[in-house]
Length: 414
Image (cartoon, rainbow, N blue to C red):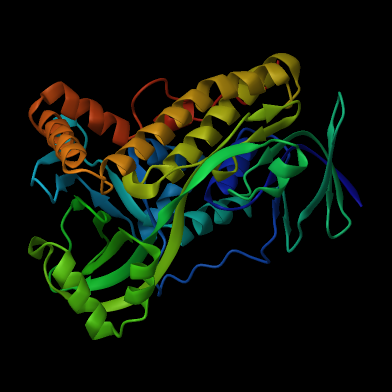
């Protein structure tokens, strides 16, 4: 069976679903390919995977009509952020009021984000959803791309968007290579209940073994993240609940309050990667298919959402002139807009990670500690620097696509 669409999006995760929904809201014919059989979310259960959604990303969700459902189920706004260095107690704080905003962002469960986007996709007649199938081949021609799926379907399209994660099959079939590195660390994630209701603040502390984060969820729940050596993460995951709570109390600051129970735990390895190019004729990468970053600043999902918004804007503006969704002029503009920004974020987070790692000599450790303390002091005490950091964390720095301001891009061809 052969079908035709304006855009094919490979991968129905958070970034892929937003990409497909945004193109569909712009009145294009869209096909979405997802290898899982369905997207499920049970509101009675909390997803252990959560994301710190920036203000820009939240406004993208509003633009495509998915935010109301997220807000109606549960989202946790955070208005303040506190960061400090355990070695020196140097610190910095951010308050959205100082930037003229109600919040810095929202902590939202990944499953809820994906579910809400899919709910909207399923209401649209101009969206074909292919589940329980995978991409098997890609061919590119001057006037179209041909996508073949494992269930035998063939899709002819103007543009293929790869949003199928860091191990992207679509990227491999398109012949795009990546650069990257694995860190000798893992992240332990735990959803816990606490003695007191959570506040509107996120906490992050840098230690010699790695960062620790405490993120507020709704009610008396919180998400804890602990970066450490793989052997230590394995030890922690093997502990009984009482022993695990004791270990958390020993390591995490008392000011965060007592942990009463552990709902879920999980872990994942840490790495960064970056595609050597984002586009080819009739082909583009977004999200983790294009880049993955160290998660210590919680920017990975937000970067991917910005990719989606910029790609849709570039494609729609050129489509209005040419009536072709696969214009290489549009795709190259997208790459020029997003690739340098993502490269900068990758290098910045990698630098922070390296700066807080144990060093060989006392002299180098002392110099790094002094540099860290100075950076936190400047961010805390120098108003313009503080506000600039906040705007970056909120996704409001630099040139913004229309969706990041809550508006869909131009949708009508000339």
